[in-house]
Image (cartoon, rainbow, N blue to C red; front, top):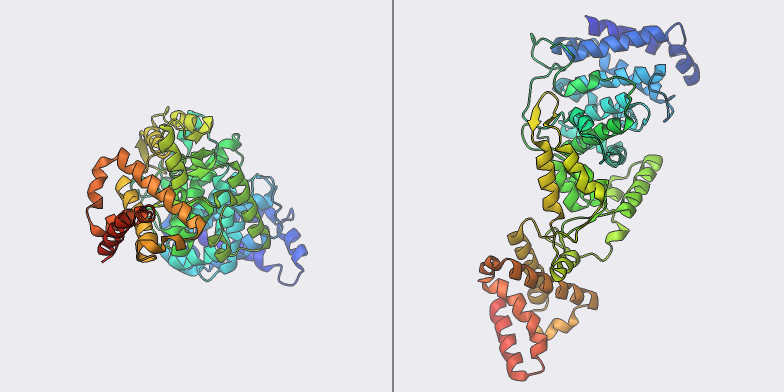
Length: 501
């Protein structure tokens, strides 16, 4: 009943403008006579909706979703990006988004949301309100829940969710204090828990102190005394929203796989960093994204962040183009050869210097952040306490900065496959190796050097070279040198042909 009454109140304020111009309508529902009623109705709406699944069902039956969509659209139309969090229009938007975040946890509501394309576009736009952190929290959480539906995933990509969510990743504060880090919430980490959200089982009672689960985040203050902490919270939520849009998280938070989103994220964040969105704790990834480092697996620096920010800003200004995002490449990575997820140049340099770990270029903040995070005993995961998160973050970062590939056997196979494709399948026999373009011949040399260094460091991998197909590219490598001595050349060419066969 409370939810139905709230929807009715929104209907009154929403329908009274049908015969007036858009500007007059905006001033009307924010006038002194109306704004108090709208504020009270929408706040009651979100509180009752999130507290009980039955209230959410009543809101849906009473036609509340189209009314909420209309109210949000009217407010978004008059919002400025620097709107104060306590401005009436910002408060209305915040409570509307909180209601929608609760509804998005219900499958029936998600089905109706899939028919409201403009609603999705308005929710996505609310991710760019830097002075209204509560509204951003609710908007990103709504996207997280909507991503449980494959049709909504696609619609969110089409209305430009990526250009709005990815910039939030770059606002994480790597120097955040341990006390603030403990307060951060990860609604989609750890085991699934019951939450007092729309769709929760009837009869669940609300614990003292607020809401449980991921929806506890919606009960936060409109004004935040620590904006660095607020932006770090946005970054964590955005990482989980992106992971759910691409279907990267594991059970119990798995969502449908979305190849288009995964492809765009691999292009915009690089393949190695995008894959880490699947980790339960995104903080080590966020430390990397807000630092500079160069390892065999990761190349990331300030110029890449700046280039990415400019591209995403252009997408927000001129409309999102998913195909353009999927085709994006960093100018800093031009000419970098990557095989099996490893940057071959960096791997070879680490091997020659003999400092695989110590020569990794990582900013001081990168090294300090995991230690700071590990000072506290646990962190909040939306109702779940996960111990030793800092230790896990530190070990993950250490593995990344270590210079050696995380999967040596996979890297070895990828190197052999690369050589085989170019020296056996393409050339057929050693006499045709000179036909390789100069740049590709240089890449072949780099890969051969990487394979040599890998086998020296991991002799056990020599067992992977026991087949003819694995030996063939190595024989092909020495054929040109043997050409100067005809008997040796003939033996090498014969070995190449036999291996290829």
